[in-house]
Image (cartoon, rainbow, N blue to C red; front, side):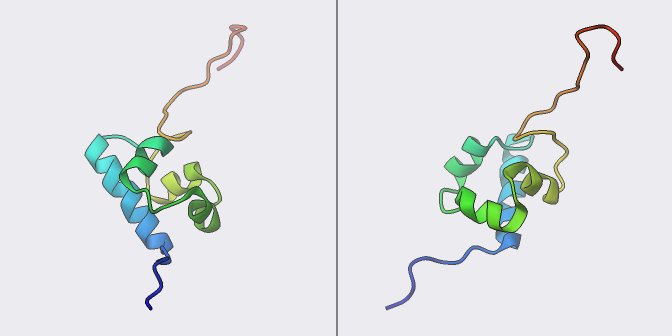
Length: 80
């Protein structure tokens, strides 16, 4: 009987992230990614990249969080 639990390679994760980003026009949020690719679990992403954000970076996507872009501003008015 063949193994039903296919091992997912790091390259497949990166390709899936890029595909989701292309469809959305931006880095996918983790929930969007798992909806599009339910076979890729967080544990697999952690195994190869450490975190979802690091996986996004490995896919060449510019973001600071899972699908978010933001810029830090100081509330005190003395920041950058």
